[in-house]
Structures are given as structure tokens and as C-alpha cells.
Length: 426
Image (cartoon, rainbow, N blue to C red; front, side, top):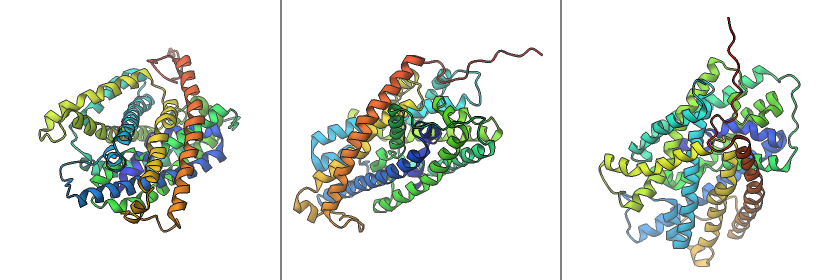
């Protein structure tokens, strides 16, 4: 299960990171990836601490979790009460829903570069139908084998991008002018914040792991591995294509068409299908709990009851096909709270009393000297992400998003497609 993090982290964001680098320049791109990478690992650690705390408190009350998947909002409810549960649930579900929307848009955006007989919107209809089949997959335990394959696919794509860009060399008259505008700078920064915000499904996946306490080290290792994929591929692609990336948010659109590129596109498609299932499964669980179907044994009944979750996702992917800008908007408005602010605040509040700190199932890690230091670090994360991620990032990514709507329109038929070339007569 460790592998799911490596995968659900990077997925399609790999393809938009060069676009972010073109918006913010090479140096900022590298520094912010490392900064948000460690910030993301830290908040994933906080989520795992709160999960272990909740579980140990409940097990003292002899509650059994044999047939029940613990979800993040239940952890918030158990530790901090119903208001927190409602806030956590709202943010998490909206984020996972748009996460699934982005996977669908990414599928259509990628396949177009292999087969442009259909426009991107038609491909979205087709992939929506394919992704709807995830309603038949009961739970996370069924994704183990896929996680392993997904890791290989992501690794291949990242190294393909790196090598293909270096082999291609710099385009003629390449310009690296980033950063030029604050709007673009913070849009790029927010996409990076989104990249390392892949742990909204953390609690469900911890529940699917057999030893949840090992989760903490795994997340850090996963992040370090992710750096070996995201840093070289984004830097090499930006080095080769420079400012052209500003109007090509999907890196595949600039790389020359070769069998290697086709292989990368196909692997990413399979991978996005898995990630769609990954992001949707917690939504299915919430929906089943709402309508009272979570304990139903029949797979068919559960699958039918899950369909209302897939339909709005499909609809949104057709309305907003802006691959790239939508990642930043989701990063600023949803990931900032779901993944960074809420876990840090929840940790501060859970352990605010001396007795809670004394009975804590998990004490502060060895590299943090005291509870006070932990408090200071969490307070810094809340303020930083609120101001830079949500405030500046929200302003920038929404301005950029609205600009896409004005340029391409809603329900855009083929976002950022090259104009059709007239057929040559032989």
C-alpha cells in the first residue's frame, strides 16, 4: 500500500509541472517543490497521528472496526466534535470530487495526442463511461496490485519526459523569462502545493494497510522518491521549451511524437483510470453511509447506489476542460484547507490540554524537542498556507481560470488544441 502514495501523489501533475516552472522560473520551481514536499509529508504525519489517537481512544471503549472503513471526517468527529466533522467532510468531498474531475480531463487531454480523430470533449464522454466502471470495485484492498503498476507507469513517464527533452535539446531561440507576472507566479506555486496534497485519502488508505503505525516513515520516503521524478522531468522540459510552455499546460503537446511518447501517454491513461478509482472510492463510501448502503453485502446493489456520484464528476469535466489551470484553482481553494490547514489546526486543538498531551497515543517525533515547537510549526503552516496558498494562490489561480473561460468558453470543444492543418493533396 506504501506505493499508492507515490502514485496518487504525482499522476497527471507530472505533465503540468513544466507549465508551472515556466510561470515561476527554474529556481523558484525547484525550491517550492522541496518546500511543499516536506510540508505535505508533515501534514500527512499529523493526519496519521490523529488517526492513531482516534483509533486507540475508540478501542479503549471496545469499538470494533472489522467491517467499517474509518474516514477522515469520523476522526475529526471523534476528536473535535460535529462542527469539525461537517467542515472536514465538505472540504474533503469537494476536493476528491474535483480530483476525479481532473483525472477525467487529463485522460481526454492525453489521448488526444495519440488520436486526434475525436476532439477532447468527445474523449471526455468516452472516458467518463469507462471510469464509471469503478463503482464495481468494493474497497482499497482491491487496488494493491494496481498501485504497484501505477508506480512503474509514473516512473516511466517522468524519465521519458526528462530524456526526451534532453535529447530534443533547446528549441530555437528558447526564452526563459519566468517569473514575469505575480498572477502566473502564484498560479504555478499553487499547482506545486496541489502536487504534494495527494494525501486527502490518507485515513482510508491507512485503514487498508495492515500496520498503520509504519505509515509515517513511508510518507517521507514516498516524498523523497517523488522528488526524483518531478524535479528532473520539470527542469529538463522547461530547459528545452522555455516560454512555449506558458500556452501548453500539458507537456505531451510539445514533445515530438514517437513510439516512446505514445507509450507514456497510454501508461498515463491506465494510471489515470486507477487514480480516478482511488479518488472516487472515499466518495462512494461517504455516499453509501449517507443512504445506508455501506454494510450491504451485494456488490451489484452497492455499484448501482454509487452511480449518482459519478454523474456530476463527468458533467464538471465537460464544463471545465482546462487541464492545468483547474489544478491550481483546486489547489488554492480546496487542497490548502483539506490537506494543510485543517490537519494542522486539528492537531493543535486535539492536544491543547495538558492531559491530552500526557495521554497522547503518539508523542512528538524525535527531531522536534517539545510540544511547543510542534505548536509553533503547525501555527506557521496554518498562516503560510492561508496567506500564500489560499490568499495569493486563490486570487492568482481564479484570475487565470476566469481568463481561460473568457478565451475558450465553457464546454470548450478542444482546449489548447493546435489549429487544424489543411490536408495536403498528393
